[in-house]
View 1 (cartoon, rainbow, N blue to C red):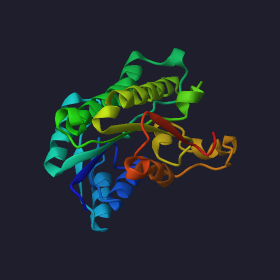
View 2: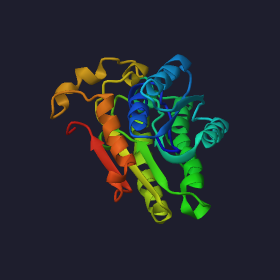
View 3: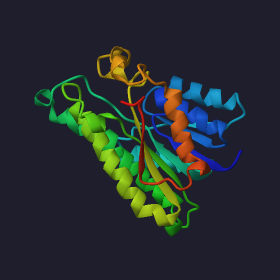
Length: 248
């Protein structure tokens, strides 16, 4: 166990939960960010601690700058920040663009885009050698929807993930000489609860036939790719976007 802290936003369920557990297994102290489900977040902490890891749960909405600042302040008290996984994100109900409200679109961008950028800002302040830091890694969660566009489903979500792709490349170039690597993962159809949030809980399995590998992926398969990017094994990888999508 080192003093390195990994912040995982949206860490109480799905991919975030799997990342938190996998990061702890690789020696990180994990700060599990969550928006509302305290019981789920505490279960992740318990799971990590039962395997001799260290973790804390911190409530906060990444759509709120004040909550983001509080999250990083708590992480500072836990140890030295070594990694940020920008996992928190939302989807809306299945809709065409001509049916979407301004409020829906603004909330989508506030959480999926602005929240990720603000979290990265705080991470850079702590990890960059320019600011006296020791370096680190930022992994952003994108989606294959950024490539496919998600027509008739959630184009706004796809657009938010397209922004994450651009942000990943640009920030990676910006801080490459300051000890920070930045990368993104584009998951495909993954068996998590996020599909229920869009009103279609069976979506991943229903569309599995469209995947060249003919199956959905698991949260653990995404987590394995993320913790590889967080590791020294990926020491020459930055401004990179990795599809983990079964070929979709």
